[in-house]
Amino acid sequence: MDISNAEFEVLEVIWQGHPCSATDIIERLSEHSEWHEKTIKTLLNRLVKKGALGFEKQKRHYLYYPLIEREAYQHTQSKNLLEKLFEGRVSPLVASFANKGNLNKQDVDELKALIDQWEKNND
Amino acid sequence: MDISNAEFEVLEVIWQGHPCSATDIIERLSEHSEWHEKTIKTLLNRLVKKGALGFEKQKRHYLYYPLIEREAYQHTQSKNLLEKLFEGRVSPLVASFANKGNLNKQDVDELKALIDQWEKNND
DNA sequence: ATTTTCAGATTACAAATGTAATCTAAATAA
DNA sequence: TTATTTAGATTACATTTGTAATCTGAAAAT
Image (cartoon, rainbow over all chains, first blue to last red; front, side):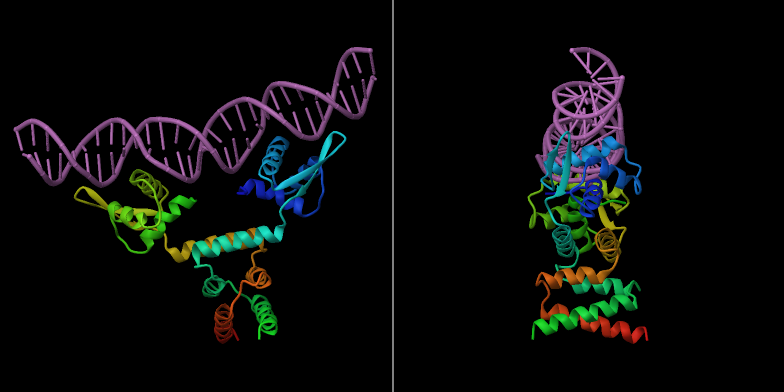
């Protein structure tokens, strides 16, 4: 299932709180985008057709909810990128950030904590 | 400049060794894909039009070379993904890999080395 | 009970993408 | 020198994506 950029924007607000009506979604998106209501309806339809969203009929409008979790999506997208560009491994990506001066102390502290945790679980 | 998946495959083999002729590229790609020669020519044209490839005329065929570096492409793509999915920070991505059991000792060792290096440069 | 409205369904249409086939001019073969 | 080959240029066409407009039927208003 391939989710386009525009579709992703819609999914994103649904992940932020669901189930929710189309009106809801349109309202929430209006703060970040200039999309026409009709555009958003189209994207909702496509997401349903792709199996990324489900809905329940409620009188005459629908309540939508995600059929894929944000974490799962994050992970598959990340894996795809790493496989495409970094032989599937994380450290070259981190190295690339380090080399460009795009790592700060907070990032490094978090990485250290992750490593400690990993070592606690895998000794 | 937006490079499609198919175009990326072509760029990838050019990064692996350039300058190179279309014939060269077609030959190298034939080991990994079933693309028709004409398809590859189309992709070369599109990459040139997009400014991702340059070429020099050589008698009647061209020698192509990349106009963007792989490292630069890696980095912008990585940043885009992180901004889209992880608030622009690397550690949540690493955390996601750790949580899925997708980190091994080599990865962790490399990350530790990166951190040491970073701390040496930023104390 | 009619009319109006509005949610979702269907249709529209241009640009990008995947995947080639055809055209054209120049180089090479005969 | 004429015929043939062939590299790159141009054209083709279906699908996906961005961005809506129109249609349709049921709910709400009068």
